[in-house]
Amino acid sequence: MKHAIIIIATLVFSATVTAQEVTFADFFQQFPKASLPYTLGTESLQQQLENRAAKAPVTKATRLAWEYYGFLPSLEENATENRMPVYPEPIAAFETETHYAVIFNTGRNFARQYKTYNIAVFDKNGNHIQTRCIAGVNPTTMASATISETLEVTISEFSVNWSKDYITNGIEGNQILGIAPLSVRTVNATSAVKEVTEDWKNAPQAQQAAVILTAQN
Image 1 (cartoon, rainbow, N blue to C red):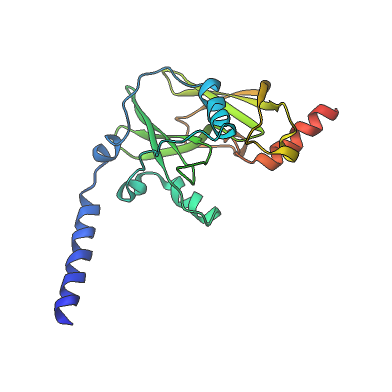
Image 2: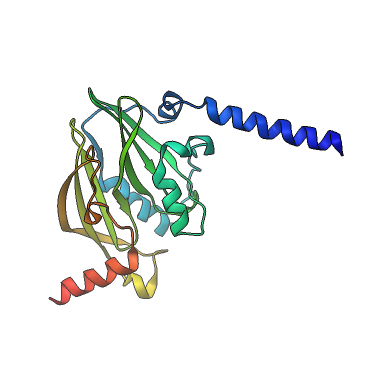
């Protein structure tokens, strides 16, 4: 019994020491380096829907290890809002003269979940400034994003037009006829102050209702 207790205590101590040794540089290295300007385009977003409609196999993404979650406070907030586990996927990392920034996906399932892209910005000391949701896709809408050299993000939202009514027929076996622009806005990713309207909301049901209301008007 004592031997088992010693082993457990050793494992806990080792995990604590490992967590304490993780640095911002370690965290930043988990993300593929990219240059600015950077675009999350509609082509790749639409391809996600088309792959789902065709039941195409999906390659399992690389998940950000749990010991790096502390650098992304929004992951904890995300987890409290939904009981399903979050699977953050490192997408890209940028460095400017005054800031660091990373993009990560917060899909909740590696196999079939559509991607939701977030940008987290840090100062040169690795202190987190703010995280914003800037792009993503679901069966009714998608949002593309272009990030400038000064970390200003232009978010363009589109509705998805299916050959068969999505609500009635679903996505599998369906076909996209095209996408239609809904809105465009620009946000400053380096600002610590964030308005609620700055984040793109990946809420298919609410967005479907908005699309129907817009069409009726």
